[in-house]
Image (cartoon, rainbow, N blue to C red; front, side, top):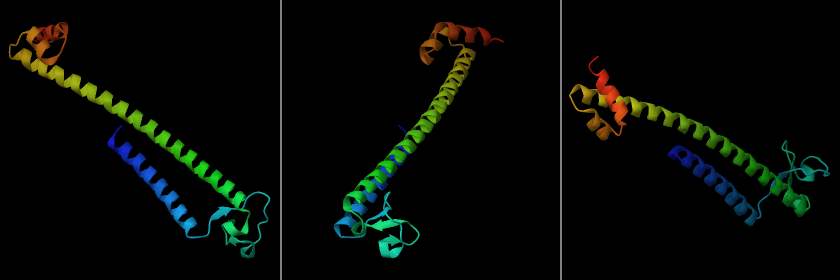
Length: 149
């Protein structure tokens, strides 16, 4: 796994952990837990516990189990969306790495051929070229045969 992928995953995990920690801290202080209105609850303005424009309820304005269940569902949805995003990013990264691997292999092969030609032009025998560069004897002999042309 590349450094960029590792960094992205670490940053995502750190952000998620921070958000969970912040929520737990707010809850411990008795802060207001905000959640969308669960199904079946009336949606009536600020006097019913709604924050303006967000369709949310205070934890003390609704049954705690309804709010807890709804918050658990939201967290589950967020986690599954984050997992999908990470899987997509990992798939993109894998494709990019495979492309880079192909490019490096091509460049390494190109460089090996250039070195073999240079050795052949300096008079080194095919067997020595193959041993030094890790080429097959046949490939080295082919390069030596063409160095004259």
